[in-house]
Length: 276
Image (cartoon, rainbow, N blue to C red; front, side, top):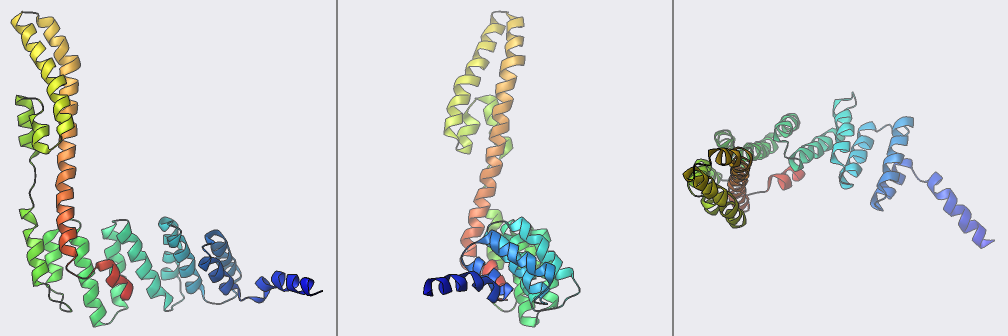
C-alpha cells in the first residue's frame, strides 16, 4: 500500500508543482529540452502572467545549452512586447552578452544604448566603459579613446595610454615579404616566421625558377614558357597568397595578445555587464 502511495505521489508531483517551477527544475537538472518545452507551454497558456520572465528563462536555457542564436528570438520578443518588467533589463544584459561572445560589437552597442536608457548615472558610465572596449576590439582606437575620456568611475588615463600605444605593436610587412620571395623563393616565409613553407618554397619554386632560367639559356623557350605558365605561376602565386594570409593573421594575433595583456589590468567588460 505504501509503495502505491509513493508511486502515486511521484506521478502527481509535476501536476502539483507550479509550472514555471517545473521549468526551473528541469533547467537546474540540465534538462534543457524539457525546460524549454515547459516554458513554451506556459507562454502558450499564459498561466503565470509573466511573459517577459518566461521568455528570459527560455533564452537563458538556450544560452546555457550553447545555442545562443536561438536565445536571441525570445530575448527580442521580451524587449519589444508591450509588457514592461524588470525582466526586460535582464534580457538586454543577456542579449548584450551574446553579442559580446559572438564578437558582434555593432549589435552590442545598440543593445547597450537601450540598457543605458534604463540605468542610473553610475551604470551609464559603466556602460560607456563597456562601449569603449567594443570599439577597441574593432580596432577603432580613436572612438574607443573618446569613450574612455568620458568614463569617470575608474581612472582610465593608463588605459588610454595603453590603447594609444597599440601602434607600437610589431607588425610584419606583406610587401616586404612578397618582394623577398620574388627575389629568393622562401626568404619571405622565413621573414614571416613560416619555416616549413619557407623550405617548401625554396625547394619547389626555387628549383622551377632555376630550371626555367636554364631552359632560357639553352634557348628552349617553349619549355621555359610552359613551365612558367603552368607550374611556376601556380606555385609562386599560391605561395605568395598563403604568405600574405599568414602575415595578416599573425599581425591580428599580435594586436589581440597586446589587448588581452592590457585588459588584464582593468575591469573586464563582460563581468561588469553582469553586475549592472
